[in-house]
Amino acid sequence: MSNSTPTAAAPDSEALAALRQRLRVDSPSKQLVALDEAAALGAAGLELLMETAIARSPSPVPPATVDIILGRLCQLISAADTDRAQQFLQEHYPTGAIALPSGPVDYQPIQDRLIAQDFEEADRLTLQKMCELAGEGACQRRWLYFTEVERFDAQQLKILDALWRVYSGDKFGFSIQRRIWLGVGQVWDKFWPKIDWKSGNRWTRYPNEFQWHFDAPLGHLPLTNQLRGVRVMAALMNHPAWKDD
Image (cartoon, rainbow, N blue to C red; front, side, top):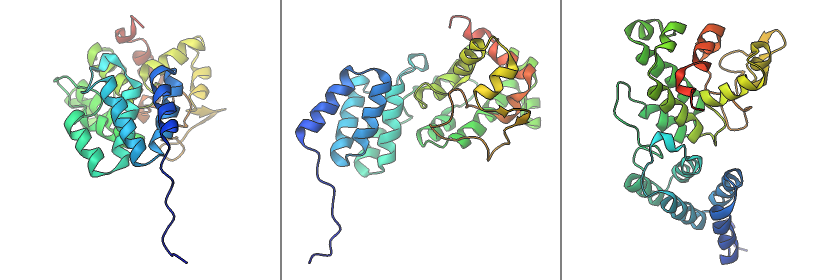
């Protein structure tokens, strides 16, 4: 009897063709499911993921594009952790799905952690970068005044929002939180439980009680713990960055 470990059967051409078709015509939410199915197919699935990425865009796209499919593709290809996958990413998406413009703050560390699906560290870095936007005083204290948030450049805030949206399947981000806040009539006591930051009279405790994964409720992240104050969150929700949304 052979002691070799059984290997999964290679997917047949019909299964791959069906997945390829779904990735062309399905809705974004269904495409995300198909991407995960492809990733589970090993080498053949990886080739399909890379093919799909090139078909969408052979290079990173601007933040305003908010391409959640390309974001998930970069996550899954990176997670494959093979020489083939890493060479592909280095050639086509060396910084990730988003081409970050030059500016006063370097957001690449956030993009790196979101690609790695390390949402907790990405959240910590988001607060750090927002403090950098606010200035030296905020960096020293490591939290924000609402007046500092009000002065944020709209494009900088939208870049941060796009990073979270692109790498969460449009589930996380400030604009997602704002949509929920508007949906509950801007009532904070309805908003906090909706995104699972509070249950009854009890605030969710940072960091262990928060959900640092895709299964978290809509709008659960980014947290950046110090943003729970109403005045700071109100400044974020009412920022001119979202006036056209």
